[in-house]
Amino acid sequence: MKRFLCALAAASLLLFGQDKPVITKLMIADPGHFHATLLQKDMYPELDRRVSVYAKLGPELLDYLTRIAAFNLRKENPTRWEMDVHTSSNPMKAMLSEKPGTAVVFTGRNRGKIDRILDSLNAGIHVFADKPWIITSDEMPKLEQALELAERKGLAAYDIMTERYEATCEVPRALVNSPEIFGEFQKGTTEKPAITARSVHHLMKVVAGLPLKRPAWFFDTAEYGEGLADVGTHVVDLVQWTAFPDQAIDYKKDIQVLDGRHWPVVIDKAMFTKVTGEPDFPATLGQHIHDDKLDYYCNNSVHYTIKGIHVKMDILWNWEATEGGDVYETVYNGTKARVEIRQGKAEKYVPEVYVFPVHESGIADIVKKVAGLQARWPGLGMEQSGNGLHIIIPDRYRVGHEQHFAQVANHFLGFIKSPKSMPAWERPNMLAKYYVSTKGVELAQKKK
Image (cartoon, rainbow, N blue to C red; front, side):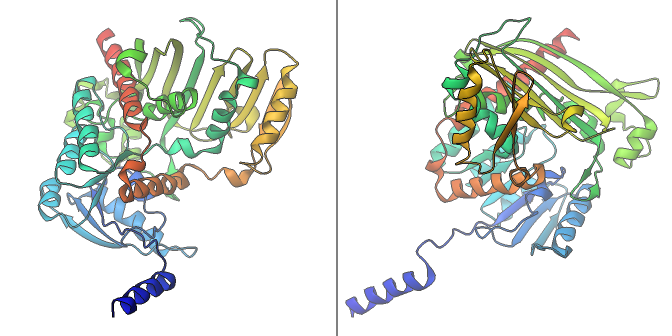
């Protein structure tokens, strides 16, 4: 009998597969940002199609549900989400009390997000949270506590760093970490940093085919954070992910934030109504309203060193793109070459990668390296550009910002299945990232 049962079990494994996916039941808490919907643009075999949503009844919840419905109703590759919607005056309390799922997604309001993350981890819930987890430097101890708690309890706690999956960021990373063509990083100076980065976002835009409506609290920097504390976390992450791959960074020893500045985008009432749907500025923004216009402090500049290398970045917001869309440009200066991502008019506002050797003889080494990278990116090409090379990345690798959410989600689901599979450097580098983003804002505000 025992032999029969063993044979039956073996036959079942052959018939149904040995790696049955771990099914995660998802909860969405206060989906006040469109990133919550982009995570559900695709289906995942490891995710239960039934999702529990906890939110206050209002326009943010309705916008979220409208976008999910659009995914379910689209003709090409429709999703099949089933939504259990729970509305109350205290969604977090209700979610933690009922706990119908095993993982929670946080997007939207950033002030106090780290407290909601801690409450969820204490309740034994995996956390997948949009950036930023914190917006002020005095919350760093809570961030450390959350990451330590997740590790101790064997829970996945991961933030949504989509830009790591962009080919125009992956290829420069490979080039920068090729000593034969890049050499070592220059240290740079205050006047001439070794690494510069520039990010531009727009308040008015279209996402997943629908015009984006931003909630009024988005413009309250005490609630949502300034530009560096919010979208700037992507840029800080990309710099350390590119310059120090798979290496742990100790923010207390390796980073020194030297300077920070901020300045506003001025928004009149008509613009505010157009982007939020609100007829007037709310009272919460009163201290930033002058001459019936809102000073929205979303633009930041920060200068810091990481392991002695000078970094300067500008995080900018414009009202609306006149040409192209959001922009990310960066320059990495090595002793043998300079690697750049450009996204200007000459590139038709599409990110392109360039390598400029210090000496002309370096061209041959770059050609050899790019040929080797074709094993990872078949079809990768190159052409002469001034005294360097333009690296041609085929369109099939440029899947775009919206598609990157599924790639990050798959990593998160993998960490749920095996929490110890998360690289050891992720947690210290997350602390380093948020130290730079919050400290840079703090220095800017002190100047004011």
